Amino acid sequence: MHSLASTLNETIQRENPHVYEMLSDIAKLIYFPKEGILSQSAEAKTKAKKYNATIGIALENGQPMHLKVIQDNLSAYEPKDIYEYAPPAGKPELRAAWRKKMIEEQPALANHTFSNPIVTNALTHGLSIVSDLFADSGDSVIIPDKNWENYELTFSIRRGAEMVYYPLYNDEMKFNASALRDAILAQKDKGKAIVVLNFPNNPTGYTPGPEEGKQIVAALKEGAEAGINIVAVTDDAYFGLFFEDSMHESLFASLCDVHPRILPVKVDGATKEDYVWGFRVGFITYAAPSSDLLSALEQKTMGIIRATLSSGSHPSQTFVLHAITAPDYKAQKQEKFDIMKGRANRVKEVLESGKFDDVWTYYPFNSGYFMCLKLKTVEAETLRQHLLEQYGVGTIALGQTDLRIAFSCIEEENIADLFELVYSGVKDLENALTK
Image 1 (cartoon, rainbow, N blue to C red):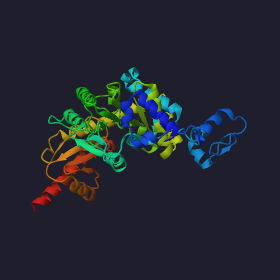
Image 2 (image 1 turned 135 degrees about the horizontal axis):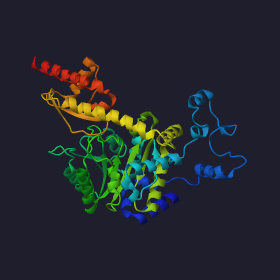
Image 3 (image 1 turned 90 degrees about the horizontal axis):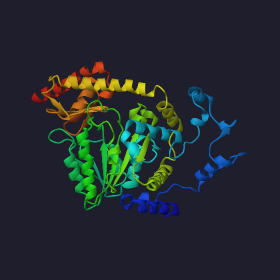
Image 4 (image 1 turned 120 degrees about the horizontal axis):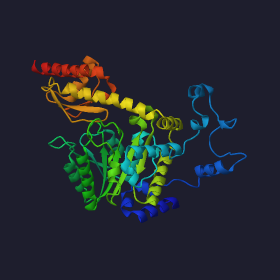
């Protein structure tokens, strides 16, 4: 084991032995190199006043070399802000700006100690970092039965973890906190669990209410008190898109300092929040009372990034930084929020008409990009294919009965027509079955 990894491990063990027990085998071995090319280049950047022949980029006339055909399209930005490598942890100004934004949008965070957000290549990369740092073969990853399918690839296929599912909704069609608690307590023999909390939920668009949020925190705390080390991951991909009286803050803040056996990890990003899906800019943030512990986790995270991605896209980070610090940012974001809320409200209005009650119900939704129908008479995959072939309508089939509709990409005036076509597709299949 490298001495830097040993030092980080010793720090984590000293500050919180439970967090050390959460680390995967790879996490215990990983470190961020301080004596190699990056550290020597960083030193040269401050001291090499005459010639700096360290970093692997090309310079011309004192600025990063570039092609005019590219720069002509990016003339609003200085070459130094788009062509050079970004630091492995991300552009410092962007990290600071995102941290400020987090506190503004979640005031409760101001009372807690948490790390500076580390830039990831969007949320999938952030979750991949979580899996590398905390998931070993046989570890349990607890997610609801209605979930984003990439969790299985990220945690189970890549890292060999075991997926543990619980029903998202209880009999009252609220968040099933008791099922979550039972799933956590079932891991007592293992002594460890990774719990992924994704709100607004993909695929259902559901976010728990404030009381349900308290029940979730209580469930995790009960697990911790039972001796289970819990990596509590808030997948906040759709953060801010809360259209009704649900929680309007991430559970990340509520989980800070709840118990020494709970490590809150927030994965979020500009991808969905700021409608820049192709920019691939996300963040991973840790919470703990110890700044030394947070620093060690940051170093290990940077080690994972260095070993896989090296560093994220500098242009994308610059674009996001300019956006979230622009004077018109909040007003423009509110404008888009209002459009998204209007679409969600229109979906509910159409579904509440009663016209379609004979063929489907729908799962409660109040946020995000999506909602799910629960089909009564036909199979979801059969309907999906029929809609695609006969009506040119694309939907997502999930299991036998569930059909996901992304209202985020449908103009409000077209929503009624969309559901009319889905209804027609169901009726076509029903008629075919009776012939």
